[in-house]
Length: 316
Image (cartoon, rainbow, N blue to C red):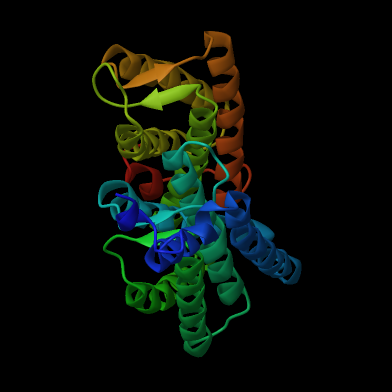
């Protein structure tokens, strides 16, 4: 037995040493895993800050940012939540599933969308977008080497190809917002609410206040599949509620729907909560006020959507 585990001099075999060294980058100092994420966070926050500083229409830039985040979230739902293409290891949260999701949020809420907003606001063309794709591909390679990120079936070439097109979609979206296309404004409002809902639920889930799933035991895998569906349905109704105008009737309608919607999810055992009703109602009052503010930013304060614009989405 000893001969299989130790060499003649009583030392650990070279293969074992090599394995330990490979794991050491990730396992020996787990606190170091967060350093690359912090560095990128600082870089991209500076990019976004510069973008807002240099842009006059800051409300539209914020709407564009939230729309970019939403598009990234929708892709992430399929790529990460359903098909497990890769895994993040920032080592910030104790539960690996939440830690993985936090890494994805940093990537899809901050790193990529902030860069997209910067490129769009500064009107940087295809060369800059391709360089952006190269930049994120290099970041991905470094993260893989540092073992703070792992591929399952994803390949870096996918990042290299898809990122420039994502940046171009940001340009198109901003152009359509400027032209005040009614469908794009409605979808933007929907996206803003959806992103807020998804992030809010993630915070409450990490605090063990809420868990979505199917059956008696709600696994984290089920949670992160059901949450986007919940957020999409709630955001769709919220957007329709505020489509015609932002007034107290719209807010009251949304609050009533919120209570009924939550009761339904509890009734069919799709959610488990540790909220008192007063706490839940307080959160919903605040989010309703926030979503009304979103509506004013998208459509303009006291600007009613009349005629075919409101009828087009079934609001009378």
